[in-house]
Image 1 (cartoon, rainbow, N blue to C red):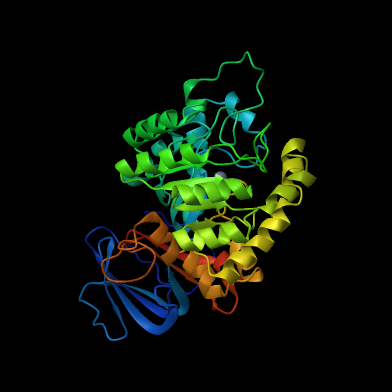
Image 2: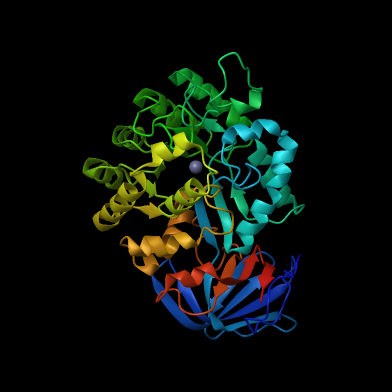
Length: 428
Ligand SMILES: [Zn+2]
């Protein structure tokens, strides 16, 4: 339980603590309900321990309950970023090869700040999609769950499953350099090798599987326009993951890689940069979520200007940013299923909400953008019964902002109140 010292008194909230077993009532001036796309006025949210018990305009406040007055604010369910990399250490170091200068423990301890900044910016849950050093994300998730450190609910991939030298591999070394095992844990070069990696990751505590279907922008020697895993390898990943109850997220920029991933049955396509009309139609047909990180182009260009990003990464990125934004618009107009994901780590931790403005600029209504980061994200995680809206039985994950994010979605960049699991982590 922490009070955030840096917060100033911009909000006239009463500070209140919701500990396990305690009853709390949150008074919400406006409550955004992504589950049906509406906003309710003057609602009471009754919380017992870490769960929401009741929501309504006429609830009686139980004797002894802690009351949190957000009657001047807009309350929303905690936000969910469906594409993060919280456990790769300090932000902004540019070249992934610099990871080799640190031990696994240094990297994961540097990541403590990333987790906290993410939660304090209003993201109470993340779907983390891979680490350079395998299983650092599992360590970070478990430390948060134990209460040792502060951060969002993390669902983690454990490692990247990638071809040798591919988008998720640590590349750029001389051929006679041997990497430690945890830098190439997920390398696989046949359907059976893919199955073996899925089995290992399921055993090691992964919550989902991340595969790399095409090349990447931020990898040495990788071409984002090329296909990497074959259809057979992607099918092996989805089938094997299903044996463990795990879903698969596929990184894909190139159109054929996107379509192979959808046909193989992945739950989501990450980036979907060069998705074509056929790919959008296939995604709709299969019910595949598109997770398009359309803000981070700003940070790639910024890092390019100040010289912190390797030149070959900038070469890969040329023109892709704008094409991705145009394709995002096409996918929204076609009615494809979309979630909010930022590839956090490309931009700094705690700044993910800046993407909302871009999602609205490129075709979504503010409510659609909020749904992408709440109810739809919970559906992608397979946890609609626990997350993604403020309803009885769900985790007490709430945020609040001043103003009306349905008129100006950038209000979500200034989250003044954060509750996760019934505990208040930020209030100003
Ligand atoms: Zn990523």
